[in-house]
Image (cartoon, rainbow, N blue to C red):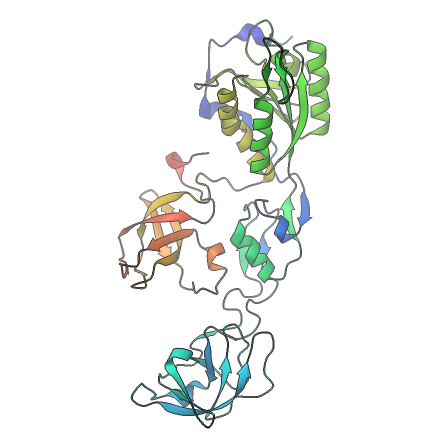
Amino acid sequence: MARPVKSKGFDTLTPLEVARRRFLRLVPQGPLGSVLCRPEKALGRVLAGPLRAPRNVPPFDRAAMDGFAVRAVDTFGASATNPLPLKLRGDAAPGRRPALKVAAGGCMRIATGAPLPYGANAVAMLEHCRERAAGLVEVESALTPWENVSRVGEDVRRGDFLLASGERLGPADIALACALGLERLDVARAPRVGVLSSGDELRAPGSRLKEGEIYDANRPGVLAALREEGAVGVDLGIARDEEGALRARIVKGLSRCDALVVSGGTSVGPRDLVPEVVSSLGGPGLVVHGVAMRPGYPVGLGAVRKKPVVLLPGSPVAALLNVDAFVLPAVRRMLGENEAALPRGATVRARALRRITGAPGLTTFARVVLRDSKDGFAAEPLRVSGSGILSSLVRGSGLVVIPASKEGVESGEEVEVRLLRALPVRGARRAR
């Protein structure tokens, strides 16, 4: 017969990291299933499979600047002191490709984003041109082929690998999915986590309190944390400190949910009934009861018939700290999320692998890829990172902000990087 939970007491407390590893071994590795979700509803969801590009972005050669579509060869030798005249043939607007072709010695007015007319292979910037009478445009700058043109597939080419399974989707990921024309994304099914409070003294917020009663803060707080992390919190209400009532609520929660969180009644006092009830419902029961942390040591961790169970102390600070330490990592595991130590929006220090160019007089947001090693992070600027290259916010790890007063960052210089997505790190620096 199993030794009663209460008789174990808290003579020995399990170290936090040991407790977490022991508990997470009982949590099923997700995703627990997948659902199709519209991109605009997918923020914060976790991909259930890798994402590859079904088509090119952009799907055609387009102007990257306002100006005039030209043949680059017709501008060779042009300068401010030697402007070359071209015959204006019409306009090219976004949304349709002009039927007219840009012939030798001709040009066409074009707006940013408009398809490049047939025959043209460059765009002369508006500020480098002068319109004259008789339908002539003087070009004051020589152009190379495809200058100021966003080529077909420049952002993303059909078949490109974009995101791995387990990536949590951010705003840039949603935008890129829409740019690819995707109507649905395959995302992990959100795990259902039942949340139960126990205690004769607890009342729901808004109730009239009698002497000795308090409002239940833990259950709403846990439900909010679950929702923020991408799980579905199932409110199981408040149970009395009575074995039959607790058993009925816990059994109901386990039948409806993928995991269960119970707040209150988790210690070793005479009215702390929850550990005994959980351990009586099926193996393995509690594998940890008492963790070496303050506040929050009277926590119970285990599983009932392969469904994870976390027993939280009744004190609200202790409860929420244990949610962060154990419940949320379990949710991430059930979602199949890639393990990450640093969340999107965090900042890290890194060494520039090569020069990162700034624009004097303008604050520059340089997109970089971070490499992690035993010597720390290294930041490598993305080679393709124009304002129309949406994939640079998906392929990039973070942003280096170069102030307007600085021309750039030199190779080897230390920089601060704001993360665009969660970042896995090595060994001792891992936070989860």
